[in-house]
Image (tube, rainbow, N blue to C red; front, top):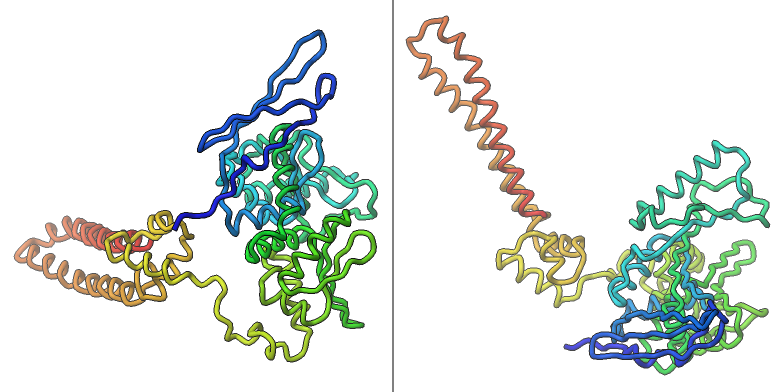
Length: 435
């Protein structure tokens, strides 16, 4: 079945605000074929000079779960100003990696194009040793978790907050990672894409609305669990009233009631609405918020009457589709036994392939296969010991004591070498099954 696509031609801005020269609004020129869109504009500079700027986008992106989740995240946490620089920030590496991966896959945007820095919610430490310690810790954490190149970080990698009373970094606080790409065309195009998608999200299919709201909730929500007066709620922050109206209507379409509060909040409360959030897995994109949400939901009594959560009987939400299971087993039966190769061919993770093989007693975790190999290994070693002993006795028969002493060490080394070679051969077989 051919996958649905979003044609990016429909999101090309008509004009673009320039940030150089005379700061005028420029006409945007576009040319496209079936694969790419080429955008360009010309800026008039001083002394009658001019400069052309251009950028190439793919013609289309996937109309998929991943795309609408990331569009929700970008709407929530991405920059939406005409500064000529697109920015995304988050304090959870899983979310940052999801966004970076989407740009790589859908927009063919190399992760090495991103410039980055880390923002921490403390005053800049006066003690130099402590400052060096926390900065080293944060830089190491984010480079390991995101694989962003260190040479693409800004010269001042760590930035601090002035208007806070916090002096020390909490143990679990890893700061917020900000990734940026300074390109006026890129920024304008992404902003226009987000603007049009958000304004028209209510007209999309219900499942795409759900994915979009998962991104919004992961980026802009907070979980409030106040036990003394049993105040349980989730609130979404949105500074614009028009955005709160859109999010409210999207939640309505998912049968979740919400209400606007103050000047920037959309509140989801009452048990039935929170249970609906749970069932639709709307909180799962942010691991941190999801854990807090699950703790909050466990405070409700008799929740098992409304949902199979917290019962131990719930069907795993990340269970592999039957089609993928069959394809995995077919590839394995055809002789393609390396889990990495199977994963790449089917477009799923190595862990999913390993799980499927384990459930069907095959491959890396096929207990029968591994037991047979290990049993054979032990049996071989047991057989080798008397065999070499017999060869030694036969060879040394009728030999002098001096000859026996001379060649004894030779047989010990030979015996050890062959045993190790045999053991390594078995490990080689195991590796080829499991990799």
